[in-house]
Amino acid sequence: MSRPHPVRIRTFTVPLAGVALYYFAQFAAVYVCLGLFGLYDGRAVYDTRYGTYMVILSAIMCAFLSVWLSSFAGAGWRTVRKDRLSGEQALSTVPIALGMLGLINLYMIGVQLLAESSPFLNSLLNEYQKNVSVPATITGFEAILAGIGTGILIPVVEEFVFRGIILGEFLSTMKPDIAVLLSALIFGMMHMQPVQVGYALICGMILGYVYLFTNSIFTSIAVHSLFNLLGGVLPPLLSNNQYGALAQIELYCILIGIFCVLYLNRGYRKKKIQEG
Image 1 (cartoon, one colour):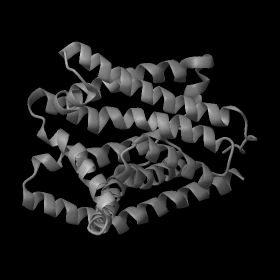
Image 2 (cartoon, one colour; image 1 turned 90 degrees about the vertical axis):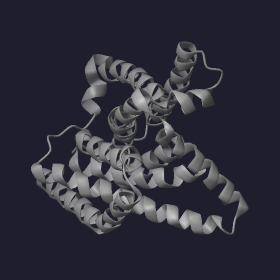
Image 3 (cartoon, helix red, strand yellow; image 1 turned 180 degrees about the vertical axis):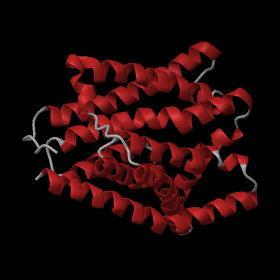
């Protein structure tokens, strides 16, 4: 593992460019959907063509990423950490993802309790609940596209942007803990909805450390994908009893997930010692 370079101009321009590209892709995907389906505003796209929007957003971002990572004779691709995973590392992604969901459940319980005494926070919570309920109301082919986009495509795109590019740049110029925190802050703020920003920050920290400890984008993609599938795609398909059972498993997995992250950290530290 190479020593960090001094902070340089690209330490700031690379993350800013990554964020700008992600925002641009979101706006571009909305306008493509408006043109394709003759809709009148972005909210209509989100309410009726959410699945198509997610797939188009992923396609646009993949195009951007292909150009970015292949630029400068492929130097961008070489900066993305992509070590091969061991069996233990691959298996650890499941309890880590479930543990993340357990933490988010606790976070949302806390937000709901605080919202009972804060009209402002209650309005933010209602806005959040309205937004996250939209994918659950979509049916048919749009629901299939939404599942593919949410559970597979978006995690791949976001991991390459926020861990592969942004965190990768920070890791090249500063201490790992600071780099992970800064990338998590950017990841959290990118979600914009205030209630969601809080738990996206938590997820960004965990995903950042998973990426750091395994030296592999494949681990963070797996955890992110499982998180989205189990937390966003699966729940609408479950009955109330099944959903309650899944929520209990997620809470139980918090400690198991913490143990798995510590296990990954142990391997990371061992490797650093061996490399001197």
